[in-house]
Image (cartoon, rainbow, N blue to C red; front, side, top):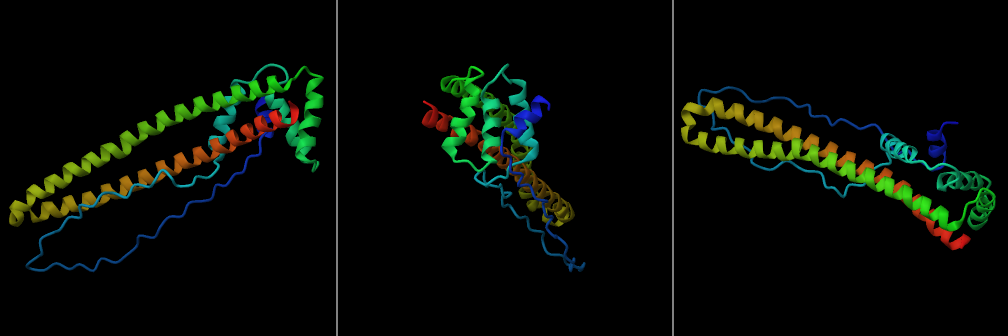
Length: 227
C-alpha cells in the first residue's frame, strides 16, 4: 500500500458532494415595439454575494490535497499516522474508545512510541494543515480580487455611465438599452462567481475542519487515556 493510501485510510472521510442544480431561467419575452418607446430604466442594485457563513461540504478534491500535504511531510518510522491507522482498524471491531487507544498504544510502545511523541507528531501534522489553509486563503483572496472586486468596480463605472446618458435620453435611448442588458449580464456573472467562490471556501473549510477535529480528538484522547 502506498504512503498516500495509508494516510487516507487513517482518516474517516465523508464525501458529501452532491450534483449542483441549474436554476431554470426560461421565460417568454412579451415586449413589443411601439412608435413611442418608454425610457429604459436601470436596476442599480448590487449583486447578491453569498455569505461566507454558508455551511460547506466535505470535498474529495480538497481532502486529497490536504492528505497529499500530510504525505509530503510524513515522518519516518512509527508516528501519529501509523497510530491513527491502528485506531481506525480497532474501531471497526466495535471496541470501547479507551480500549481502542490503549490497545493501539500497546502495539505502538513496542515500536518506541510515547504519548508525548504521538502528540508532538499529531501537532506537527496540524501545522502542515494550517499552512495549507493559509495557502488556500491567499489563493481564494486572489480569486475574489479578480472576479468580484474588479467586477464590482466595473459595475459601478457602468452605472455612472448610464446615469450620464440619461441627460441625452432621446438620442441615446438605444445605447442605454444596450448598457442595461450588459449590466444585467455582468451582475449575473458576478453573482455566479461569488456563489462558486463561497461554495469552494465552504467545502475547503468543511474538509479542513473534518481532519483537524479528528486529530484534535485523538490528541485529547491520547492525553486522557495514555498519560
